[in-house]
Length: 210
Image (cartoon, rainbow, N blue to C red):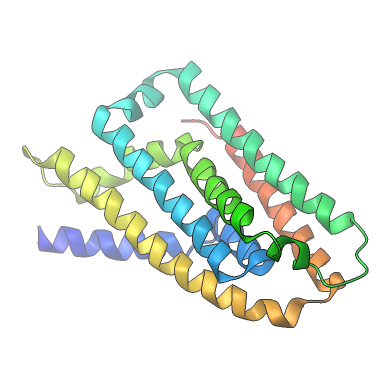
């Protein structure tokens, strides 16, 4: 059992380090509003993970697996939301700026933090591929027995704990780098890169199958 948990931790760490929508969401928010906003996005992402733990516990994940309509509906909502974030970033990249970016965002810390949290939570909660992934990924680390459901939820929680730790480091590091990226030209380039990646993740999710 100890070997299985160790193997899962190593696999979860490797998966966490692979860039995805969460990575770019945290980087974008940290550059725009500082470490606090990046941490708010991280908290939202973790909340979205707890949502998937609850789905797993109540068996809703299996509904997504066996119901084509439910899977398609949630998948398209997630793809549309990622596309919305991507288009928003690209519009920001195309907008002329006479001064350093991020100043207007930093002036509204309260609303910025709430928005970052909501973005993190929605990008996770509206991604049914996460639920499908756990159904396919976890069994290889689980021992048959009466505690499989409990261990499954613990492993999902552990995966998100590892992810939250990594994203926290990323948020703080990105915020510290923001000082060197205050020119409007650099900020627009970053917005363009993040927007393009978000649209790419949106397309990949929209075309994904169970």
